[in-house]
Image (cartoon, rainbow, N blue to C red; front, side, top):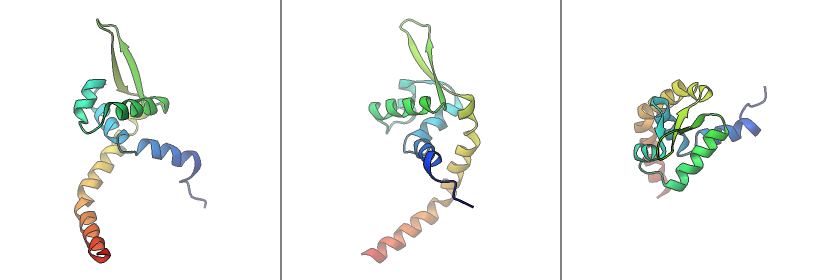
Length: 116
């Protein structure tokens, strides 16, 4: 059976599992947020990177951008129905990472010791 990881599938996974997308999706799965609220929720992300991440997620249908009829006009980002299907997967990936991090750190230390 041929591998499923390739072509369009690989491109989508790259865009969903990059450095900032996973964190933004995790935040938006909790509740809708404005741009500056997202910046505070993911403090390490810069404005340019967050803007690019939000555009990419919106293009892929994972989030929706809603213009709020306020003064001044505001924009809110929300998880879309298709993006919401990732909620359990993101939580599972974050739980796995939390459980496996000590083993990964030990493997890195062993490898780094061999390399030196």
